[in-house]
Image 1 (tube, protein in one colour):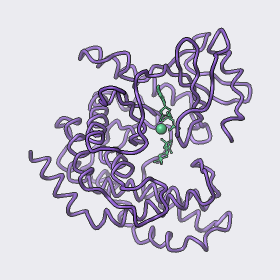
Image 2: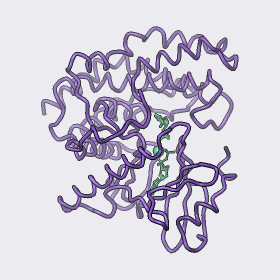
Image 3: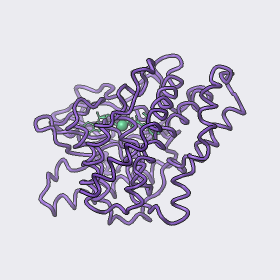
Image 4: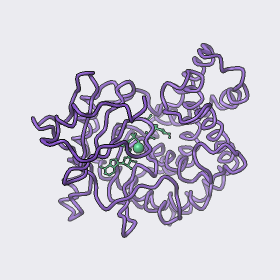
Length: 364
Ligand code: ADP
Ligand code: GN1
Ligand code: MG
């Protein structure tokens, strides 16, 4: 649905005693419908995507639990408590979210002021701080009772499951697009065994389960507009138990690509090894010695896995008629899938170099 056509009057009246002077679509997220609301203060108001997050009540409980935990830590460590984590604004009658008469779920956050988001990595230092922010996020939640978290999307980063989903979409060819994507399907098929590398490591006990963010893109960090330092990790819908190496890998997928995620000129796509190095340095520092040797060793595979998985997901959605990721042009999901697969191919060539970089960093 076009975000301009979404009815906001009812939800605004649930949160504000007077109609706000400004309320308009905001940001570039693919999943939720985000609005900026201005009264004498600014707010982020989001209509949650309940076709993707089918258990919004549990999801909000996750977010409240995690944000309060991070704030309590910031308080203890003398950090910037007001901006350390998202602040959920209650409705006028004290609820953490609002359900409108069409059964849409909404939530409101305080706008985290004097911050900026970045869609692309502009310099290596930004990416280093991004690594530190996500490493630190995981570190801050290391003592959070993972069993209290519900899984907002089952099998979210279960790559073998994503692979099987693609194969089902190929089989069904629901909207008749298969004939035009056969090389991409072949690319995926050739990597079926690789898809299981992390799940196998989990099954044999060498890869621990941790509280992870699961959508560690650069644009899910708010940076201080003056110092450029990371202030707050946002987009907490997918916080759940997962692997440190996929949190690491998703950042590399998005931030160390020399082109945007939907660039169609495949010759522009490659893995920037310098950006890989600076992110790995920041992430390892942020994790502060908490990663096991196996986790450190599998960081490069995590990067390839997340890129491959994202390509599988984009291709699946293209074959299913673009029902999951918001598209802005025809074949947008196919362009994204081709882009991700081109990046996988380049990462595979650079696996040895990635491994060497990680070893060097880990050994100081
Ligand atoms: P999506 O799940 O659709 O990606 P996000 O929660 O990441 O949605 O929000 C989309 C964008 O809105 C972010 O990239 C950021 O620019 C902005 N944003 C979200 N929450 C806040 C906040 N509390 N303060 C300031 N900006 C925010
Ligand atoms: C989605 O909403 P956004 O842009 O932060 C997706 C991620 C993908 C990403 C690809 C819940 O994230 O998993 O990696 O698009 N989020 C969900 O850009 O599926
Ligand atoms: Mg986001």
